Image (cartoon, rainbow over all chains, first blue to last red; front, side, top):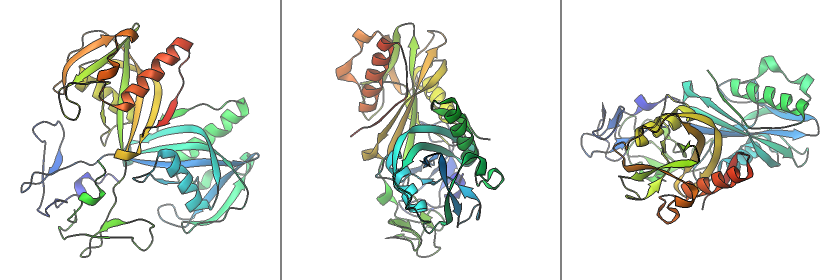
Length: 181
Length: 181
């Protein structure tokens, strides 16, 4: 995902770029020697939900790489034209065929190694009529004691679930921020 | 900032791209007909702080476009290799020459029109030895009654400051999320 160096050609004119620090800048960018376009590469947001039905949490088993076959919360890259909330709802629909009502931002997790920020919202499932989308093999509700902790796809999913169940035991949900190594 | 259509050439091989919906996707992307590279364009994070010294808030007068001469909270695009927190501290140093200690995420504001998410942290100034960086004309501390409300550079700055003073009056800070038209 850290693909700053993947830029070889200018998106505006197709010339081969140089890597240098522009005059009014303080870090290296891909700069076009022909037309002057500076190519910025910045972190991406991954938006998702913790969808809950009564005391159970919905997880999706991944039908795609990376981490094929492992379990995840519904989440994916935020797109242009949507808010973080709309993206989280969209991903929950696309991956789990599930309709949810958001209940607040729950986790903001920095994953610097891959240049991502993961934002998870607590969400109330509106019904149990969910079904796996093309990117999921299976979608299921899990009680806390049933969560497949050793078969989770991502650290951010593990950290979010741990904090979710902890807050639920304490009877109060708050915003969690953390850096994931 | 909504520059999906600004991609004319493939970053990998320089060929002219086509705009189409890839087979396993559901929205239009710039796709290279020669090498197959798909070019994703996603929202960007802007990270900044509400730097406070006693009862005053630090603002910067912009030395750059857009909004040259208007006042803003220190903030800028999050970079690869840093967390949202590190980016907010860096921008506060670059724009205001100010050292801060962060006190929690305060506002997450979606600005869909420009494809941005603005994240502001509450911050305690460690000293008053600040000075304008190259992107600022002037840096000053303002009491609430002195804030130049009609000369603020951005809606997100206005919304963040309004919520900051409101929370302070109530004696409790919480996370604010909003969509800015």
